[in-house]
Image (cartoon, rainbow, N blue to C red; front, side, top):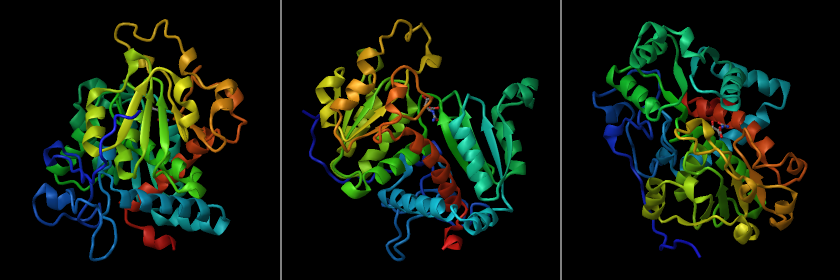
Length: 380
Ligand code: NCD
């Protein structure tokens, strides 16, 4: 049934010249760089992401692409997220968290619409005592006076310790990270959504939601996960699919109409990583096999020739009928915002996980900032 390939261990590393930085070798993001190569600054360390002498995973610096994460880092981030979420429940714990990064400042540069990602990053910063500045509309910045994108990013990095950014065009977070490396400014760049391409922090919170939901059922390993909707232009589904190479025997089921199927580059990556997947247009034929279904909306904002007009959502919708056919312990996820593909009547079903998923975003993003600034030892 699946595009089966023998699973094999693949230790994926990104080409250094893409400016995509996986695991910082050196400690403080705001400290000085030792050595003068980009590898020394924030390049890849061991391919496994774990230092075998200390057992610690390598630290994070720029967060640009889901492929930079190892299983060890994902597990560590999940544990840290639970810790932050738990500590924050008490008044004393919340006050401790507030002091963790109180001397830090963050820039939220969101030039593409956002509700959840913006608010959850902003509030994750507030949970940790980080003060935030924001630009959400480039017409209010010097970009309208003709200032270049790189000059704008360089300016932000003069004032803050981390830049969190969402852009309509692909590759701009990677370009910003490369700029920081080039000018030797130790300001991490976090990709909060880069066009149709990637949304790595959404994928992290999705992993956390899956892990939490399957806690009593062996975690993500071995699960059958359906991804449905506009898989061609939906960056959340792409980023989550990339992370699956870190889990054993996960099988992906892409449920999409012909015109919105997953792109070939992603499928090639899954084949290379030994992740099994299949594609179908018929939800009804697979729904009862799924442990999770990740529903996504039509990304009509990327239409160039009215691709979305007249699209029939009906075969790619989750409503009460579909819920009856889903396993009793399966879950429904959605990155939100939703359209007609996910009926509000599903909200009260205990398998509906999307509101929890949304809230997990704040905790996971707080954990990520804690990791980037290396203060995790201070919350024990
Ligand atoms: C997603 C996005 O912006 O890609 N939303 C989000 O960040 N939670 C999904 C979407 O807009 O469809």
